[in-house]
Image (cartoon, rainbow, N blue to C red; front, side, top):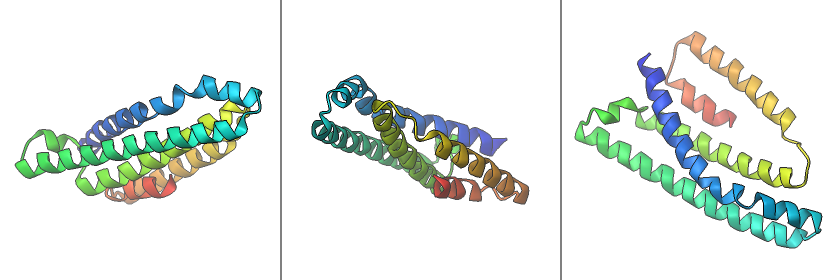
Amino acid sequence: AIYAGQLGMSLTLCNMVMATGLAWISTKYPKWGVMVSNKQLAELSKSFKSAVMQSSFFVLTGLTGVYISLWLLKLSGSNIGERFLGLQDFFFLSLAIIGNHIVACFATYIRAHKTEKMTLASCIMALLTITTMLFVAYLEYSRFYMLMYAALT
């Protein structure tokens, strides 16, 4: 129960950083749809690359800042730091969030072309994640959760 609470708090924090970073992508979606319909593919590619770089920089910087903050909280002995995953697990969770962020960016880019090519891949990854997490839970080795989650994403 303690690990589940720590995981929930850590996921919430990481997802807030990722959601804020995705603002650079989601605000461009209507513009990209117009570019696709007008066959402005070079301009679309340039706009996408710029948005992904800005967004990824924000997410990477944000997660690094959160990691350092958690490290300082744990170093100071604060009870707040104990509500989050350990630093090693948080690092692996951050890697997974960065991977999810990049996938979300490309999924938005693909949707601007009015196609949905990520559905099958998403379903396969969901099944792999569930299977792996059940296997890890069966082994009762919670330290392995985040490493496997990061490896899958």
